[in-house]
Image (cartoon, rainbow, N blue to C red; front, top):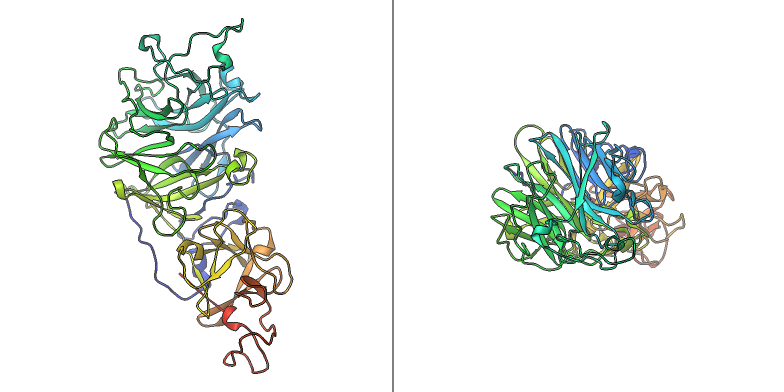
Length: 549
């Protein structure tokens, strides 16, 4: 059964031990998460994840497989020219520390033949690799979208005896289009000008047989039957194909329902099952840019499927419908390791680099969300981090705090995924996530990270009264580190490790949120004789904060 976690809303007074969810961060992970003392994992999302060697993790468009005590994360590994370099593989016991296990398949190994070797010059790409395990035959299978200039629009299949390729068993099987046998007489041209359709004399050959297949996913049903879902007809429609029992070919005795989902222009499919209900999550077709994320459900995998329903997070005001500004990659079922049968769902998505200020897919961020399923009432919980209890199969949010000054205002994130903007002071939280902050311990100090933007509070310099900014997380930058000093219960002072100044909320000179000296004098400031002597004038109401949930 699925465990549903309650959202904690009760306020409680600040205490230093509660700020880190009963754990200590290992900053050598680079990923702004940690494992708590009771074995739960705080997993940061919306970041460019690094492996345990400090190198960028290539997980875009991929999937997750839980095997034994490890989780395996697969993704697209590209050359700088976007060509296929390999299908990457990483493993972790806690979803925080990711060990690079090498590529399971590469352009130049595994007897791949000439088709995948084209990845080096950029002519061949392999996108959205998905891996499943065949219990009957005892091996793993990968399917992915194979293309050349987005004209071939085909499928590539590989298999191996282990979830990684440390035993050297992974091998190329085939590439094809679904139902490409001449007896089916299915023709979808793809790109008419693609060089694959010309002979040595430069004469255009017969239009290719078979259905186009681009964005895709794999799914294994409860009875062990595997299915492959792929977009066709220039990404206008989606087919769901049944596979043969070896998972290496399309079962051509099972003809797919035309436009199975009865929806148009859908890609990035994620197919899975909860109880007696099948689900499909997908996105629109807008290149690298995130679009409205939709969910459909059915009681039979062949349909009829429900109409497309927007799925998002209804907790706050903002981008409810774009799966936290990401495109779907995979929906992963986290199964408890204690034998209880409990499980939870994790949505995995990509914020593609070119749509978020990056120059290539290498600059992409990985977004994970807690996913709650109940047919038309399904929704996600957005957060820059997840609290994952692997033993008990439970996913929730880590502890977040509001920073409320004595005058009743809150420190509030800008509506951004980009660094450089200024945090604000507001008197009401219309978007509750923008007013929630996570404390990430770094040595004797903390980073203060916003739940919505994933940005952290930072000073710009050590100048008195300079405004704070929202910065991309960098635990090595002392401008982003803060001390929480006791003041007068239930209030605290928040002091910059870099400048020694304190956060001043709604500074009367600069406006917004700034750093200031605790005893800074200015005749225009509010005089509070109950806190300071009559000789001092200070905006003390805006420098003392309650740190509460």
